[in-house]
Image (cartoon, rainbow, N blue to C red; front, side, top):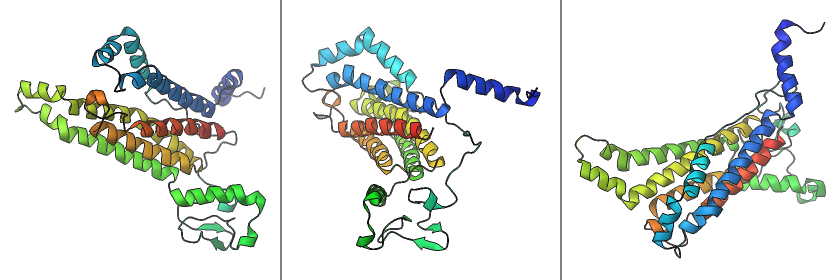
Length: 294
């Protein structure tokens, strides 16, 4: 008798969630982890071999022309489309950004540099970032606070919040797409450009490098930006994740686009590999942090 018509949709949804046992947060974390596995598999199966200087050009062409490579590559590109199930409300019917008081949140505030805990304002010396539990004298340091103090120090040194990292990644995507337009699209789509010149540009190693780098950047950017914005809305600060995301994305794109590996006119070993590894680590950390908010 407690079931009302206006509650039927909610009751049905709650029943489905109960039966399946997967929250949207957990699903988003699993999908992020699956993307990391898919990208790592592509690297292990093909990228490591076809970008190595020791691999002959004929072998590279053979691998890229194989049905197995085409299948895995097509599947990985399809999987790379971002799909987020980010929860808009929790069990308490809320979608909070930050608690009322920074002191109760157990994390430093990066928004304004000052954290209001009652009437007291506490500031990290030498930084605009704050930590309400940061000791004012060496004797105030206690063992139970060391982990928190270390985390606050990392935030202070790296200085990247999830919101700032998402903004930087969005700006970098704009630069990457604009660069592709300025260097190539404006020329090869112009009516005045001869067909032979268009074919020459599209067949050049430089075009292929920049094009491949821009496509790769476009795969990671939505996933990282969406995940970081979700963490920002949840008030989660992950400075290491933010730094790895931004530095890895920038490192990979520019060194892949303008240097590349030995089979596309670049050098061996490929200088963009550290950036790729940073992004792998960032995806793993992103999946873990999303899962923790559930």
